[in-house]
Length: 594
Image 1: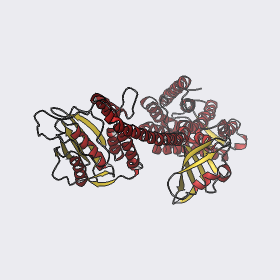
Image 2: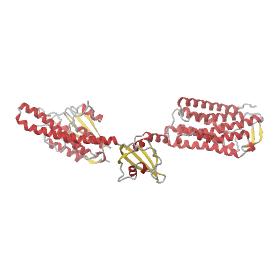
Image 3: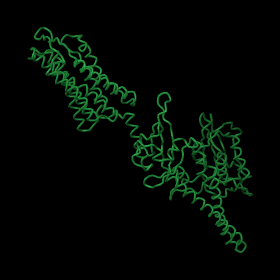
Image 4: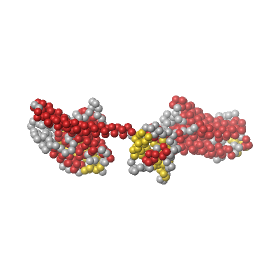
């Protein structure tokens, strides 16, 4: 018989809460297939059984009902511990979750214990010496615990502590946004663990009442906070292990992990495709790809090495290989990490472009020189009108030669420029660029700052780029070409990104053809070149902004492209603005050297 009291009602109410959480978790498991939802439901169900049965136990009025409920209480106890451990594995994704073999292994001890609890042969689990029910206090019993009881208690505590340890490790490693729910879960596991200690040590704080089930009131509040306050079963945290595996598996670069003996321990799909050999794990690298073994040892330098590999599919691939030693603990060498980047398409594209570039540039210059030579020969034989048309044709031919020279110069100047950024004094570099422009345009007026004592991060093409911009500003300015015109300049010609015109004015005004200013900030230096010409066409700016030429949007030449490449290689940028009242302001912003 059972007579409900205030303790019974309170504990049964807590059990009802646990069953409600279990039902909610099962619904989420059916709707979302969230990892850990079924295990969470099992955990809540076990908690409800433990608490509810203990609530009935403290209201027992007969010896038989009391002992029946004492035995039944162990069903909940032995269900909670493995459910908690499996939930943590599924929730955190530790070691890829768990297998049904682990579930079967964890079930052995609870099944054996429950069988002996109900049959109790020879007191292996416990011996009931006396039972006191029906008195003024809660029902109690005097029990003599057998060896299996100690094993069972250690089993329960070990699973709870092991699961909590995995969760603590995840708390340290997962992003901050997941830690609130993890702390709530730890609180839910800790409360009944601590509450059960007095009963385990045979020193109950309240005679006849175990505080472990009572502490589940705290646990259920914590679980509810994690479930509803932190979306426990709606947003599954991505642990670093899972994230790393996903990144390595999906990345385009190949990854090969070797142990200290040079045997392959892991590869990703990209590496398998690049190597072109199946079943590489467990084999020595030399037997799979001897060329990679050379790269593993570092080769002749520490940079990435480019190899030509051929796999079982007989396809040759150009591969950039980087080798990185892997250490653990205090400098203990444990293996090597090889990163493989398939650059076959890039290499073949570069080869095609180089061949086409050389052939086209050579042929353009050769054929254009033939045009110029024959044109000068027949010029005397033509009428004035025909001679004017011939001069137009020859001028266009000269422009082709200029573009060919400019392309060759840019190819040499910008080759490998990304790797040679260095400190460049701005004042002498700017002065040299301006002097070259003044030599080319003796009548031009260029205003520059008197002293610019600042050092920028750039490279050898900085002077050339500044010359291009100032030369362009002067050539396309409104008062530039006087009667004697322009002399030949040293180096490439003017930036051909603007609109050319004769630049002469009717009144011979002497306003500056180009104005150079320098703005110095804490981290950057900006050189601004202003002119009063017609401005840079929108098509030129769109091409630079899009970083590519299209059939509809293309520049008229290479000048602005080359300046833009120089700035980007130095870690800076080129911007354009309208000049007041007319013209363009080109700003080149570069990092300031510390």
